[in-house]
Structure formats: structure tokens, C-alpha cells
Image (cartoon, rainbow over all chains, first blue to last red; front, side, top):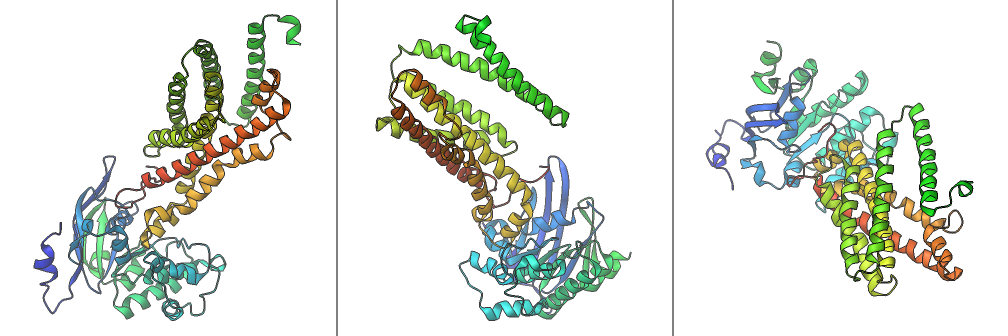
Length: 241
Length: 262
């Protein structure tokens, strides 16, 4: 069953504006009567960088997990490029909505093997040139043969970003990617993300509790409180209101 | 020493059971001093074990004259009870009882059926039920170990598993390391039993056969046969239960259901 909004809105987006690539439609999740996310509705246009901000426990990460269906919504749904994501094969959905988690969780082996992981799930192989290109995007040229056990925290997180990009996602989901890092590593990772997102025009949803970082990287912000979106607009207006 | 004071076999048996229980309780008290509380669980398990084995002994006396097919019902009952017991080791795991019961039924049941049909296990109730129960009990332990290890390994690696899922991995392959580790860990006791047979321990069955007049070499070989069957039943049970539980920790949309605090 494919919902119909794609034909009306996704396909008919005004030519002057980028098309909508993601639309959360009254999205909600409650676990054992506890509401985590309630009635979240928003759209994301191609190339847009959106930050989800809010106090601890407001549901930022829960909302992000609903977007790539790591958790199941108890109400509402998400449309990805016009298709209700319940009609997409979960593995394909997650390839399209690549996620970078707070901790990198690299798999034992080399950096190159980690980058190969996503494509290998679809029986594809990543060429050495493609690996080097991905590594250069995150400032780790020549790191392919290194064992991930010997990487610093910042390097590991940048490998995690490159590993997600190896899947050629349509949207990049970042769940507090620098919160577990020291200041120097944080800047390295942030610079890699900025390079990837801005230079490639990648659509991005980023959860962060760092308002300065949100202002540097995003153009639009959603403010969450107790699982509800209470504000949605330009990052400066939402975060500094 | 007990034999000096107790001349009836029943009294002697009860006294021996009391002494063994006291030793076990002493261990529980030692653990308590280290703030490890096993009192309630151990007391209940010992009381249950004693009552159950006396009940089974009494039933076996009655069943000695029963038709041979009745042993199938007894073994089926044991499989259900084994499923319920080992499912308790998998708290929070979806469908743990059914997974355990089916795995033990398949693992132990198929080995019992095969070996009985080949004549390795005698079809007499006095042979089939005790040997079958050994296979079922060991399959139960293996199943409990496998599920318990799988649960703790998955909970300890939620981040890695969800990262694999987020990168487009199939649910089954995202928990492959946990399935492999729990399968291997669950078979450690069975492998060690085989490895140390005759050196570290001489199992009860062999002692029983020797006491009942069997030739020592045959008793020894048959003990190996039983342990090999235990290994086969345990391995098959663990293989089945880890495969079945692997699919049940994910939703149809390939979301990991087993999460800390849920």
C-alpha cells in the first residue's frame, strides 16, 4: 500500500524549492504507557540540515530512531522520498537513512573492512579508490589498512561517518556524534561532518545538545520538549529565542 | 559411619541425603558471606529435586510392568518440564518456553529416537527412561546456558547490533557473533565431560552397571556411548534454540526487541 501524498506534494514541489525527501506524519511512540514521542510532524527538503534540540530526556534520540525505523512508531508514519516507510524493506530504508551513533561501534578489523560492511550487505564491493575517496572526505587519507583497535576516539568517529557514507545514503542521521569526544576530537569530527554535509549537499538530521554546534552546522532546528515538537524554524530563532 | 547407626536402606538413604544437603547449604552460607544470595533458590531446588526423584523412583517401580510405549509419555512430560525449567534462565526473552521445549524435543528427542531405533538404547522402560532422562536433562542445561548467554551477550552489544542493522545488515547476521558465542559456551560442559571421562570422573551409570554385574569393559564403552549421545543431544538442542531465539529477538521490521530496561 503506497500513500498518495507523494503524487501531490513530493512530485509537485515547486520548481524553485528543493523536493521533500522526508516527511514525518503525526509520528508517535509510547512504551508501557510512557510517551516518548507525540504527534511529531515535519518535513525535510533535499540538502537541508536540520538539528533536533531539546533538554535531556526530551526524546531527541527516540525521534531519530523512529526516522530509520530502529524503533517502531505506535502512531503515525514517515514518508521517505514520497513512500510510506512501512512499505520499504527495512534494510533498504536504513541504507537510505544512514545513521551515525554517539559511539562509533566499529567492527573488529581494518578501517577498509568497516567501510566495506554496508555495501557487502547488498553483495557489493567498494573499490580501493572509493574507500580512499570516502576516507579523504573525513580527513583520514591512507587509513584504510589500519586496525580500528588503534584509532583515537575522534578518528574512530570519523571512520563511522565514512562507513555510513559508503552506503550512499539519501539522508544522514547524526545522533550526538561528538558528545563522547574531547574538544580537539570534537572539532575534527565536526569539521568532517561540515565537509561532507555542505560540500556534497547531503540532507542531514542531527541530534545535539551543543547549541553552538547546532548553530554552526544546521540551518533549521526543531525544539523538543517532553516528546513534542514545540518549535520549528530557522536555527537562530528556535535556539536563541 | 552412618551405616553403624542406620540399618534400614531407606533410613540410610535419607540420612545420606541430609548430609549431602547440609554440605550444599554450607556452600550457600559461604556465598552469603560474600553477599551472594542463593538461599531461597537452592533450598527450593534441593527440596524439589528430592521430592521429584523419589516420585520418579516410585513411578518407575509401578511402570516396570507397564507396556513399553508408556515411556514415550514419560519422556514427553520430562521434555515439557525441562522446557519450563530452562526457560526461566532466559528472563525477558520472547517465547522462551516454546523455544526451549521445541529445542529440547528436537535435540534430545531425535537422538533418543534414532538411538532407540538402532538398538543403542534398549526399549525397556528401565533403560529407555533413565537414559532418555539423562539426555533430556543435559539438553535442558545446555539450552538454559545457551539462552542465558545469548541474552546477556545481546544486551551487552546492543550498540554493535543496532549499528549493523543501521548499516543495512540482515537481522540474523547482526547477531551472528552472539549466536556463535552462546552455542560454543553452552557446549563447554558436554565437551569437558567427554574430555575428562574416566580421568576426572566415573559416571553413575557405569558404576550402576558394574554393581549390577555388567562386564567392566562393556560398562565403560556404554558410558562413552551415553556421553556421546548427551553431546549430540545437547549440541542439537543448542543449535536449534539459538536459531529459534535469534529470530524472536527481532520484530518483523528487523528491530531489536531485547533492550536494556525494556
